[in-house]
Structures are given as structure tokens and as C-alpha cells.
Length: 403
Image 1 (cartoon, rainbow, N blue to C red):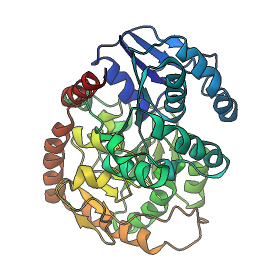
Image 2: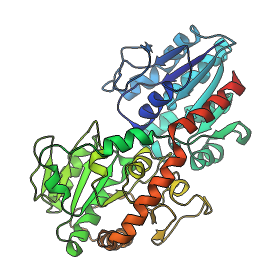
Image 3: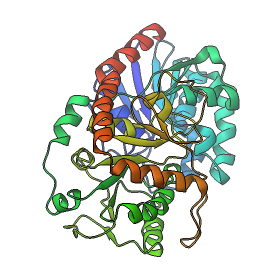
């Protein structure tokens, strides 16, 4: 009898980061990866089931699910529990359990209804509907994700548990206090809006660029800093140029006078976030956003889209969780904003109504130091509710009941 941990890979990403953190907290006898990609510190050498990497075609990796499952089944038996994160690993876990008899506990990290569209959706959504309901337990990282799985993918409610993401608040505080790299102090002497997370469709960053151009009319010295990398970086840099925003992208010494900075992946993003006037989060969908929670732990006041899963649970936990705001909502731990459309409009297109609302609120907050100070203090207090040690204890209790 034992616990095995399974994930697609340990590439840079929120789910991978959370998995690696929990792997250091949960006693287990092996850590298994579908792909040969390790960019996160883990307590032991993982077992790797293929030579696939982040550059391997997603179609090929989806087609390889049965092969992964056969390999996993050969490593497990009826007395084992396998805890998996992310969709392909979850499906592999359930398929392997049907052969080996091990107990499959799967964890969904995002809202599949939002995450999967087009050809990718046509492949993954039927697989999720077919296999997720067969798991022994399905853990969602937010109540919104749990609703999505129950309502849209047929997972029985009695199988769903919710365990939120955790964060190492002490480590984040230490990183937040670290000095910035050369040239960045001059940038952060200005009113800076910062955002973090991978540059992907889920984050809606193109809206933030359009909103920021309007903000600069009210706050001329403002700057916008993106932390992260992803497939939309080239598009976003081009959009910034189309919006006539002076842009810097790279890891060199930044010019003090640019409008938008694409700082890329940073091993320590918290030193940037802690010095920003405001952390803005325009996500179109989420699971339970690490970036938002870690920004609060770094001491940044936050303003977030009230998307279907995650931000309301963090910022307004006492409110009805199925409600969505149509106007700026000064919640207990941050500001919730109307959801954005997701449409990618031309640079010359006028702002959409929701974008105008966002630009007004951002401009107001950048010039309200007392309110920002209160949200910074309250955000730190809220982040402590998700301390990693507390979350790990929830996992230990759950797994002890299922092993």
C-alpha cells in the first residue's frame, strides 16, 4: 500500500508549482510524470513515462494516453492510491485504475468548460466526461470548478471535494523583500500596475493593454508590467505597438520611460509585485488563481475580474458564490470587476463598456493611496488563510481516508 503522485510534467505553471509544493509536504513512495520535463524542485527523482516534452504535439500526447495508462497500471496495485493533477494525467490515472485496481484520486485545476475549445475541446471534453465520473474521488481547487465538473461533465456531487491552493507565505514575504534587478527601481518609482501568470488566452491580457491606454490619460506617468511568458507574447507585444504604447520586452536593463514592460519569466516575481501600486487580474476563466493569491501574500492590493471560478472565493468569501458583479465591487479583500468579453479587437476599436468601467476604476485606485494601503493589509491577512501547511494537512486527511 502506498501513495503515488502523478502529473503531466513539472514545467513552469501554476498547477505544476502547486503539485511540487505539495510533493514536499505529502509522504509518498513515488512521483510519476507523463513527460520528460522538470523545472520545479521536487523531493525525489521522478519516474518518467515518455520522452515527450512541452514542445511535443498536444495531439500526440493525447493519443499516447492509453500507453501512459498501461505503464502506470504496471506500477500499481489494489492497495495503492494515485493522486493526479491536470487533465491528461487524471484520465491516465482513471484508465490505469480500471486495470490495476488502485484507487484513483484526481484533482482538477481549472474550469474545463473555459479551458478547452476548438479542436482541443473536441478531443478533451468527451474524455473528461467519460473518465472523470469513474474516479474514486474528484478534488476541485475551487467551488466554481466543482460546479463545472458536476453540471457540465457528469461528475457525481458525492464524489467531489474542494481543497483550495496553498501558498508559502513566509517564502513569498522573503522574496518580496529582495532587491530588484538593475534598472527596475526607476520603473517602480512610477505608478505601476503589474499582472502575472502565463501569457495565454485564459488571462485576457489583451483587454488589460487596451484598458491601460485609457488609464494613461488620467494617470500619465503610469506603467504596466507583465510577469510571465507564453504563446501570446508576440501577439501582445504587437498589440501594444498598435496601441502606440512604448514597449520593452526582455531581461536586460529596462528603460525608465517605457509604457509597457514584458519582463518574462522571473524566478522571483514577488520582488516586482510587492513594489507595484496595484496588481490587476483580467482572467476570463480560472480554477483557483495562484497568481492572485501570491500577489496578496506579497502585499499588493488586487483588482480582479469576477470570472466564474476563484477570485470571488478569495476576495469576497462571505458573498453568494454564484453571483457575478456588473459594476466595481469593493469586496472585503480586494476589488471585483465585471467580466471581460474575451474578444480580440483591433487596436483602433473603441473600448467595450466593461473595459471603460475597468479603466475608470484602475485610474481611481492608482490615485487612492489610503484605500490601497488598506487592501494591502487585508490581502496579507487573507493570504494567511491559504498557508501551504494548512492546505497540506487537508490533503493528508483526505488521502488518509482513501488509502
